[in-house]
Amino acid sequence: MRYRSVLCLLFVLSLHRGLALAEPLQLTAEQVANLELTTVTVESREVIPTLNLTGILVPDRRKVFRLAPVVDGMIITLEAVEHDQVRQGQVLAQLRSSTLGQAQAEYLEALAHFQLVQAERERLQALWQDGVVPESRWLKADSDYMSARASLDQARRLLSLAGLSEDRIRGLEQAGDQLADFSLVSPVDGVVMDTWIETGQMLAAGEPAFRVADLSSLWVKVLVPTASLSQVAPGAEARVHVRAYPGRAFSGRLQSLGGEVDEDSQALEGRIVLGNEAGLLRPGMYAQVDLEGLPQQGLMVPASAVFRVGDQSYVFKVGGSQRFEPLAVEIGPTVNAWVPLAGDALAAGTEIVVGGLAELKSHWLYQGGE
Image (cartoon, rainbow, N blue to C red):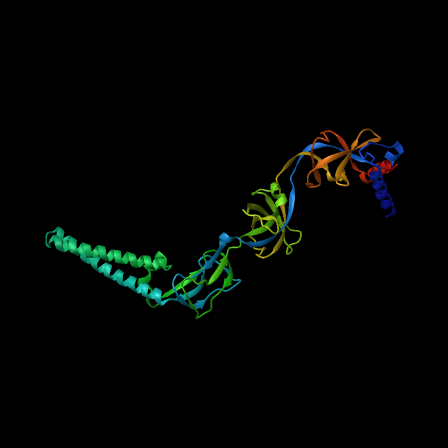
């Protein structure tokens, strides 16, 4: 502590005296031997920054389904509840609807009438062609047939709008007492996230009954500070860490960036798509995210080669075996332990000090205070 205090005092004295801190430092051979200095050569290189962000896992919204009946009905049986793993096409609930039953009965009535007029039309068509019946009678039968077919098509469309498949509509003639029954089925392999119904409950048309999610992929929502936006772009690779699996990284990719910066946090929401085929991850988990940034190319120096005096950054340029010149430099943000250089203070091929910097700086400050 006393040594540090002396250094600070010397630095303050040097500033007050108006000494030129950028004057070269000349050491003796013995001093250089005691410093154990190491050096590097300034060169152009490419570095890829890594942004350390926090995020939260949420379902892939394109794979979340809210199930509701198209017609009103009463819950007869409840086949699935929250947390259940379900398969595509699996029945989640059976319902009975008087509205649907009435529509099905009207369809069957229209079907029976159509079949009757169709048979009559075919019979009269043969007789008319043989000249047995007049053309007017055949035309009347053909008109009745067209009208019956239109009525049947309308009844079929109503059943289709009520959620019945073509196979189910074709099988109505054999349905018997189950005419008014229908099912809510899972559209995907997934997990029942929410259930809002009970057996015996009357459910209105459009009223939600289930929320089912395919969790084979998830989204990670992250907030990217505006200061870092120039470093990222959609498509960047991400490594996601959650507390449930310490030491394990899950691979994902930045799919998109939002269109509006949050006023309070001054950050932009990003969305990372994360594979979850093994089902280890769950929505709601917090995550630490290492997001790969855009490559940066230019003159770089190790972060350990840069030191500050006040608000100015410096490096020590090697001017000989015992001579070291402090150069003021303009730098950018540190990227993976490398510091990009701006301006023309240093050129490629320049040798600078990277190890033993603290001791060398002490000699420099001491020299400035003499």
